[in-house]
Image: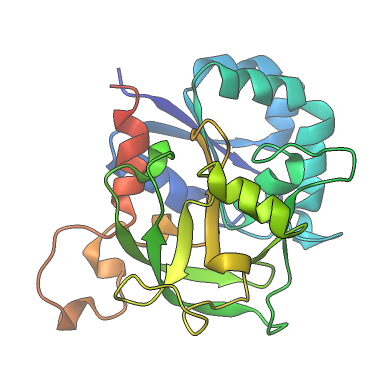
Length: 254
């Protein structure tokens, strides 16, 4: 049986259909479910193997991007999500989903002084919409197995990854949790390749288990070759760079 995926949406989510399509192309069965339905019936989690928090502007980004959605999870579904993760299941957060994951504590638990890392306004103070090169670091993350580099679009205003301090960033790095970085086409990480001022060029991070991933780029927007803005000028290829991420999630349960 193919794994079943919850695409958890809320007011302002706008990438839920694309995320469902991506998982279906990878061989999963995806269902879009409103957060209110899960709040009413937390036991729904038992019917699924993968949870995806899609991109968008949930709740209008009021109080900060992903903050209200994250508070709903933290205060009403924390035990359900912890059990879901601890059962060996997978959680993916894309763009706004990454903002939700990191602010809910699912990627790195808070301590007595608060969260170790978060996502804030781009260094430019502006919304950024462009394509970026990405370098995968390490092999801890299930979603990024056998992936070296990717070329994916970004579209965000609050995507700058920041750590509380260098000690915290060192800890996350040593744990192998800083799994995705903005880079040049060659794979080198440079200041010029960093679109939003993210600390250490971080574009995505996973939790300590490697089964929970948050990333700012949109893999669901590059599944088919025709999704690339210059596909008619390029040599023929069969699929977009984002598909392997979803395929890895599906194959994890095979």
